[in-house]
Image (tube, rainbow, N blue to C red; front, top):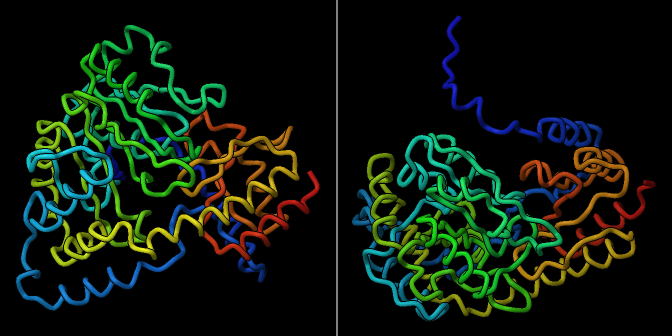
Length: 387
């Protein structure tokens, strides 16, 4: 019998969480209080002033029609103003396009800029969508290793010359998921120089740029001349507790932005106007007290996890940004074994490092997405496990 399944789907990395999902459901069925520290989804509600704007806009008939391709005027204008205030970079209208979440834009970008057989450098451990989008576009994924010794920043000098010369696109992601690492402008300068030498487009995923603790993360577009070979993705999902709203924008090289917009024109009709206007309200109040208060919320949770892992003798780097803690598994445990034991013995869900590529073996990720009291309880449960 014919199987209606494209061969390219077989090239995708295996879904490693089937067994974890099975164990989680079994624990729930057994009546256990399962705590989920796996999913990167803010548990706090979207701020009321954003919800109020949506409630107003959703009743206006003009907003019920097809959206404007590159984005509603107010949303685009506010995003440009936000970028200027936050990063000191002045964007033009042809350097920005609205997205239905940054995941969508990242996934579609290889289709827009990569030809069949082109190499794509993908950081590992890293967000799986970089690989999936590359495969769907007919590109060839090439691993760009991230290591603890390198502070989770890639070493461009270690990229083989033949790989660099056959590379069309390179993904970067800072603040980083899953490691929580942050890159400074000096690193971005090296990245832009490397990409310019080899005629590579950089796609910088900056979804966590507004979730930080000590130092504000930078934009790669702060580097002089970066607009020539960079496109950067910004999302409202994590910054404003709007994951389900699916609103984001891409900025950078006008040719790359136009290519991405052309793919989108042929595959989707843009984000609902009312949602874009609510997103404009969010961006125009990025310094709102409720928005900035989230930094303290995540910092408290981070500190609970850091203290517990320190007591356990676990190796980790204290994250400077994002809402993840990336840590070494106890000696003698693979990532999947570690995660399975935590779920079975403590009824806590965490993510195995191998979910972010083979380079993640030996690590696990904790998401700071439950309230601080539940986080304390979860970590006490993990500490009580006999390893």
